[in-house]
Length: 208
Image (cartoon, rainbow, N blue to C red; front, side):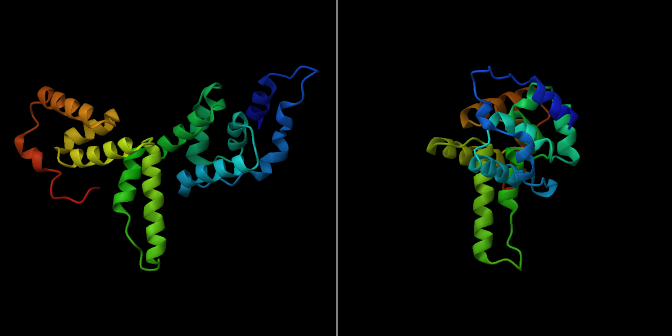
């Protein structure tokens, strides 16, 4: 709370002729912030954004509201951000998602590895697969048909590579097939220990 009060005191004060910042009362709206759950971090931010948008909360106030409900690792990550970073919602969200390893590759694996549980209906399972696919696409910033084309081509390409090369491409966060191919060739040239037998290491396997 002390950090919240400090950040609020540092916000630009409106001139006497100007109205309060959109009439937003932080202390009044804190109680409306959804409780944070470490078990569903990705879903939490989707839920929070929906609530914040519905209630017309100013986006620059979102980090101030969120820090009041963060717990565990999320609280630690937020505390480690600089004052400037802590005021940027996208930075806060992405930093926390990364801390929980909810990066594009993690979303891809969740989508590919999702299986129907006995107690769930096929309709529920289909919706879960759809949700995971959407999260994967969002994490990869897929917005056009070509973006989706690159996503599928790149995944299949990496599944045909030696594991070491595929891991390297994931670390480089490559989103374009042509660039991935160039980097893969460069990796092999600089890592002579990648044997020819490695080229089948990811083949004939279910994507994971």
